[in-house]
Length: 69
Image 1: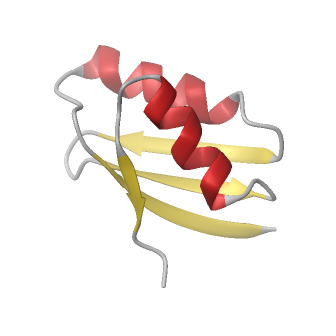
Image 2 (image 1 turned 180 degrees about the vertical axis):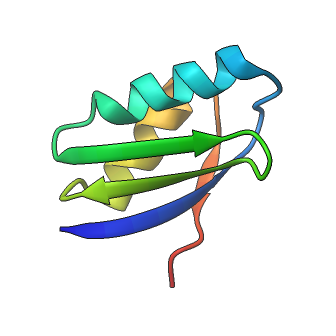
């Protein structure tokens, strides 16, 4: 298992946080996903790929990028 931190653009409210969290938790291999509005980021633990997580967020309308080195 690994932990990835993603910055997320386009979130403005609690509904956005919930939608992003649900999108990430639906990705196979995600054990835990914590999304925050301030700072706008997600911390995801599991075996899912960074690409799959970013794609899931983009599908919901939230562009994302990796913060994890």
